[in-house]
Image 1 (tube, rainbow, N blue to C red):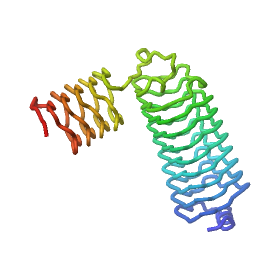
Image 2 (image 1 turned 90 degrees about the vertical axis):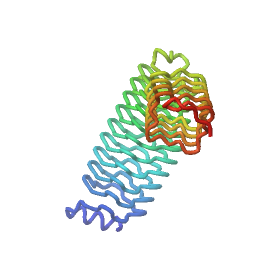
Image 3 (image 1 turned 135 degrees about the vertical axis):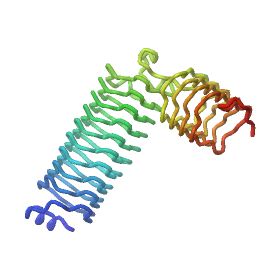
Image 4 (image 1 turned 90 degrees about the horizontal axis):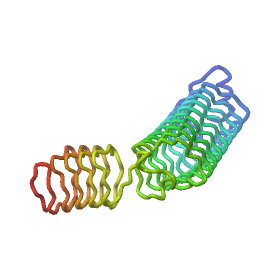
Length: 317
């Protein structure tokens, strides 16, 4: 369907255009408020000065789109593929962007105040001069993402994974990073991190957290070889392919954890909960699982060598 037909039918009162093919669609200076574009294919479309407030774009394909000066206030963009987009001067206030993908994307000068970006995925993406204050970005997976001159104050970033994330000149005051997985994060010296909640967040390198933060006072957990993490809640943690030998995880909660291909030799898991954990390919040489819960744990390809099993037996094979 081309733009002329879409506009004509919309102005005649039609609102449901779900699942329609709109590749290369070009729209400008038009209001399409409350339109239903769910599951539509809008790949490589170009929007300029379009009103999409309260629109439904859930599950739509928006790959490689170019959008500017457009409003999505209270719109539903959940489960949308935004790979390779170039967007600027947009308003996503109160929009639902749950489980959206932003791989290889650039978003400039846009407003995400109070937007829901839960479970968003971003790989090699850039947010420049964006307002994400009070946005919900929890349980997100951010890899090689840059937040340049962004406002993340009061944002919910709990349970989010940060891998090679840069926060240059950004405001994270009062942001919630509790239970975050900080695998690589830089730019703290140019950021405002006043009153950030780091409770139960963990990191792998001291350079990945602000230098003037006391990890113990902030409730941060440093995970490395020899770490004492006894009794800690590390459920669903991703520590795959890490060197964590000789660590103490006794009485810790590691349910659902990804420990695949990890060196866990000489590590103490006494009374730990590893239900549904992935230990595929892990090195369990001299590891102690006395009274540990390994129910439904994936033990394929692990190295058992003088390993103490939950029942006290010794396994070497």
